Length: 143
Image (cartoon, rainbow, N blue to C red; front, side, top):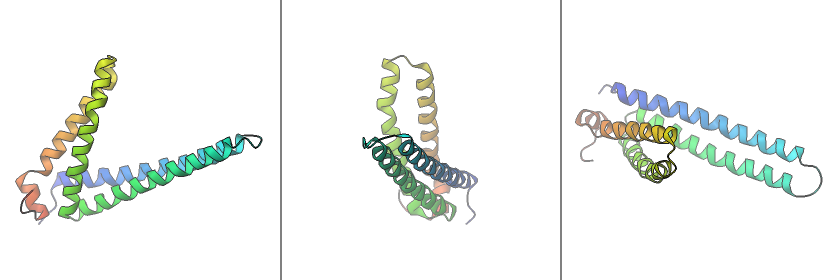
């Protein structure tokens, strides 16, 4: 079966996200090394900054690998990728609720607008991945 256009867009966006995560990880490595080099003396602050940069970079590289795997799975119409995307979208939507409450409490209009936009896009993608023709393209039988 031919890949739906929306699935192609989702896969490409996941590839782009993986690329940005790799760039962010490389930036953290460089900032950690640069911060360590700028710290003079044996205070241990330089080692802390370098370790923090390495830890953050490893976390971003892991997320980049997840996004890359999901992008490949979506591109190849693997149902496991669709299910994991639905699960991660659900987690992201749940995680947006406390942020939205904080934006409302602090009356931060820009943050609230961005959260509503994020929430809306997440709901549309979630709904799209549950459509019968999309599920059929993935060969899904149930959920």
